[in-house]
Length: 107
Image 1 (cartoon, helix red, strand yellow):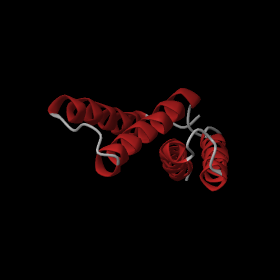
Image 2 (tube, helix red, strand yellow; image 1 turned 120 degrees about the horizontal axis):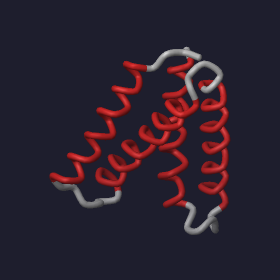
Image 3 (cartoon, helix red, strand yellow; image 1 turned 60 degrees about the horizontal axis):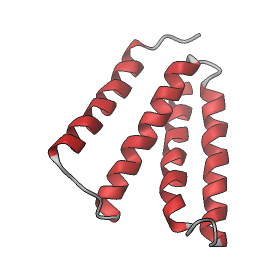
């Protein structure tokens, strides 16, 4: 169950990171509020996950999910660069997340 909470935390990590683009420097109230709610939910679910998953592993997976999801969103929605090396290095992050999950032992 802790891994589910960690992936939910990663999902909210993506939401707040992408949401920052829509806040216009925190000048738009609704996107800004959504970003802060997503931040709180992300950290809340992370805090539940680290009760069972080692904190270093949980943090690496949490940020990795955020990086991968935000990058994919940026490519798909914001027309950010898409090239071989970008895909290669993002793939390494995905492989790392899977690897950490496979070797993880509960506390």
